Length: 171
Image (tube, rainbow, N blue to C red; front, side, top):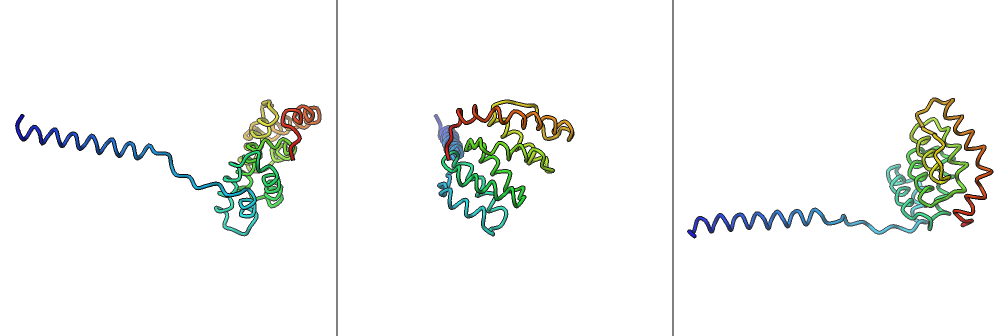
C-alpha cells in the first residue's frame, strides 16, 4: 500500500468514528429536571405567575398522577371557576392521569363548554374514566352533543357504584 491509500483509509476511518460519536450523542435521552412536589406546583398554578409558567406547572402536576389527587382536584376546581382555558386543558389531563373518577360530573359539564378544545378534552377524559365510548365528539352539532351528554348524565348514577368499586374510594 502506498502512502496515498493509507491517508484515504485514515480519513475514512476518522469520518466513520466522528459520525458514530455524533449519532451516539444525539441518541442520548434528554436530561429531565426533577419533578417538583405537587404542593409547589399547585402554588405555582394558583399564583400570579405568567400564564406560560402556570401552564407548564399544570403539565408537570399531571405527571404526579394518583399521588397528587388532592392537589389536582383543587387546581381543577379553581381553573374551572376562573375559566382559564390554557390552564384548564392540562389540568383536565391531570384528572385523567390521576384517575379522579369523582370529577366525571364536572367533566361532563365541561363537555358543554364553548371552546372546542375544552369540550373535546373533557369528553375524551370522561369517556376514558367511565370506560365506555358514548360517541361524544366535540365537533358534533350542539343538539347531537347534548343528546350524548344526556345519555351519560342518565347513566352516571347507575355507574357510580361500579366506578367506586373499580377506582376505589381514595381521597
